[in-house]
Length: 279
Image (cartoon, rainbow, N blue to C red):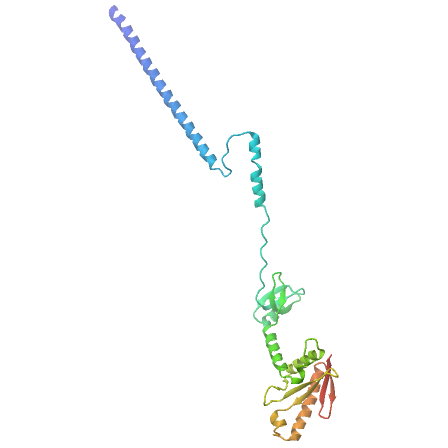
């Protein structure tokens, strides 16, 4: 028993030493593995931070002195000033196509465009503010530039056709600055509105109408009626009928022109009229 006890204790001590050594080795290996793991993780984090810094919109930020960082600050400010520049002004809208409009006292558009004048007139009646019907093109500032309406253009064309019928005596007198030209145009327009056409001197067989002759000495226009060439030249109804018709129409012409505002004087036995002015 004494010998067995003596042998048991050394064996126990050796076994304990071996176990202690094994535990120390295991703890050392575990600590080494943990250290390697943490070191590798730190390196991976540093690499990720470096990549994110290189992709930053402001560029790579490397450590440096405070003065270097401060010197780099004005560049973003200059970029901000460039972006704050006033944008270019938008071009003014182009004028619109001519149409009928309802405008106010200063020609500003109140309503429109309308397809015809009648629609614009109805809109003017419904408008609470003073309004006027105008044909023209709308400007970029909201006002209307007047233009001749389709009816006005048709009327001017018809009036031009009537003025082309004037006798050759007018060729050397007509001008834009001659007051007699203005007077004959006014007379022609008034007669045309009354339904009385001018005598057409361009036709071989004249159909009759109003004859306008210049009187430069008195700065006036002589107005008389000419019958159809069948009556005046061929004498289809006799000279008495021709004279009676001419006298009656001359009186009528004098009355019509006086009613339309012209200063009229009657001349001669057949009643030829001399028009001197428009009241």
